[in-house]
Length: 339
Image 1 (tube, rainbow, N blue to C red):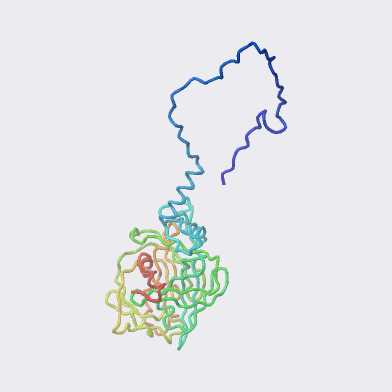
Image 2: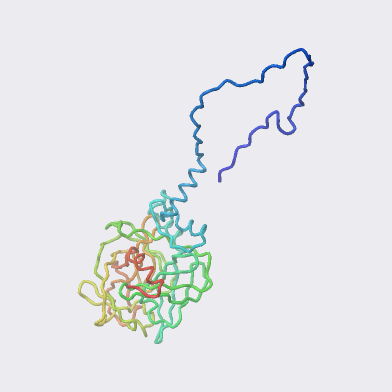
């Protein structure tokens, strides 16, 4: 906040005002009155341009940046009363530049934006994760985490519990949007730009593997544009206790976690060696600056074809849906369906 500097009072102000004495010259009726004084005409000079001070300049820059989006989107939301998604830009500061790539700093900044999701299914239950994208409780997760759910419960990083409703799903991209009931003042994650991700970039994954809320792992981007094939059958993940680990997918011509069935879809995924385990699905894959660049969706395990998800474990082959895919699908998810 910029404060004005106090200026000393002049002699004509306040307690320092000096008394004035008046003087009247004697009047002589024989003297003609002097002509009225007229100042010499001068050519008008150039109009002085008013200099914009630093406060005015900063205000203008802030408004422009908010209108463009970027890191000021969330601040703009608070001013306008509209609950918009906080989209990261070059000006976004999630972690200080001096802490870029620091896993502890990234975890501290983003963990409040990641939740645990527990869905009740007709024949069992499913546990996964989700990423808060608005302060009033919109959360992005995987379709297979909430597919066919009869009820959804969400727990935030501070231990608060909420009931949630499924707003929209997109089985073709394995994405879903849910909304908490009665939530406000939550911390949205800053959504980054997955188009700028490179192989070898440092990444951090946050989720709730096996119900362990707020678990943090780290690694690198192992590859880009990996073809991951998932089922589009809404009933495929039902009846599986801990359904996250049982959701079938195909990669490299092989099936994992069971048969994907005849109705499938393929999306391009970010591959990472950050440890992902059952329950990480729907959680955040985060870059070195604290921006969410993907939604964790599938993992390869030496026990992926085992009958129980508890037998499966990460061996460093995880996959995430690029955040640009999420952003392009968000409007349709909000409308109740994807494309």
